Amino acid sequence: VLSNTNEEPSRKRLHNVNRKLKQNQQLKDEYEKIVHEQLKDGVIEKTKESSTSEHVFYMPHRPVIKENASTTKTGSDIADLEDFKREATEILENAKFPVHKWESNVEELDNKSNPSKILGHKWNKREDTLEIRAEPTKEETPVTKRHILKELSSIYDPLGIISPTMVEGKRIYREACDEKVGWNSEVSTSTSKDWIKWRQQLRNVKIPRTKSSKGDSKGESYTFAFIC
Image 1: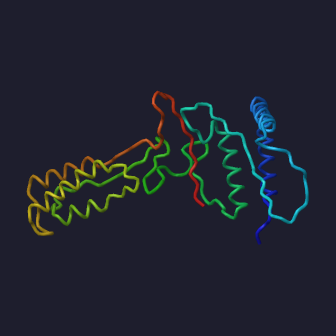
Image 2 (image 1 turned 180 degrees about the horizontal axis):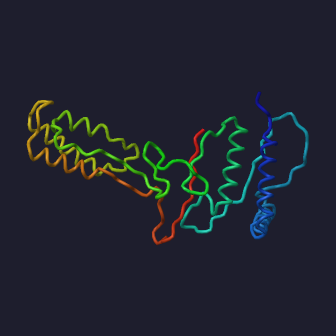
């Protein structure tokens, strides 16, 4: 049964906002200032309470603090993140999307195993890096065209993080094809050495998950990842 109003979850959200504002007088003053300015400018308006059978949607709102314009923070401190987690969980549950799992790169909020996975990559939550691992070719493994193609296809990189590096691997495969050898025949010694060297370079690739603007020496980002 679909409800014709989201009044109940909106009231819960309002209660959480009021509780948060009571804990921070400066934030409360700024919040009230913006509301009064929007009333004055006609951005928002007061409405009369009325009972109606029509569908009614209440737009929940919450303060968003952007302490540094050069960085975007999911939460400015642990308390904000805890509020966000609770409110987001309530909103999703009210919409019939129960959250089964939360993960964060903040140790105080996450005691689960590290690393985890995000978008198919290993996510080292303590270093906040994405990792791509490719086991190096063993020296005793015959390097054939079939082997090279199989290894190239096994590297999972949906975000294209190592696309420039993959060009070199494909170049080596093209050289192997130019040698006109069979699929299970070993390639030349020079091609084999190039392949083994390239695979060694892919042993452990790490990139920072966050992107800080130029000149931001203290870029800090708190992140939640949740799975419904």
